[in-house]
Length: 245
Image (cartoon, rainbow, N blue to C red; front, side, top):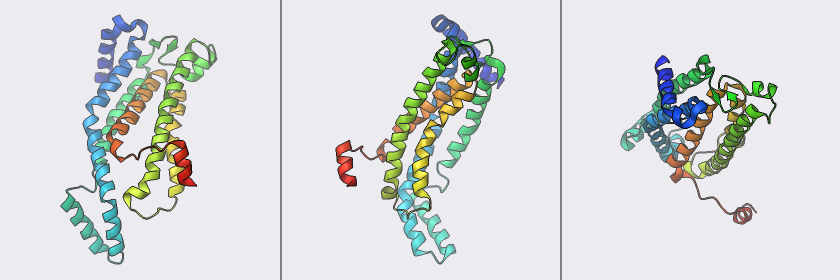
């Protein structure tokens, strides 16, 4: 933790000539981007694993149907398929788990009291949105900083919402798996999770909010690039309406 903190402080010193009093805030954003860039190979490995599972899903569904009454034979057939295709059944899980400690360390660093005394324009990095509302209101100097963050989060969440809906809508056709009980409810709720970051930004210290916004934006854009080949083309509104009717 102290190593991360010292790195952020050094970055802030380097950025001081360019960003003056907001150098620490700029250092948080830059440091978050550097960490996400460093663990990008893990994200790529996780994406490859997820794509591999999606690619094998129709064959796995066929094996489940064929060996429904023989669990031992099904287990052996699944292992043989994974070995043949050189795909680990846990592909994509380990890289995602390895990323978690970095995210937790970063969050605790920026949610702690080390950011006290630093600010982003008129908003202290150690304060919360409630503090901004109490000192100037939503449109006060500090409140405007939060409104800008909310606008960024809303734009990213809307982009991710639309993309996730298209991806989930295409999954039943792409995977060949039988319908899952409750899948319709999951498909409706999951895209809405994109907007949960709004709540996080509202309740955590501003320094942590900057980290969350930067990391979330990176995640959305990263997944859009890594899974661009699995997303069906978006239909024009009139064509989509004609297809539904």
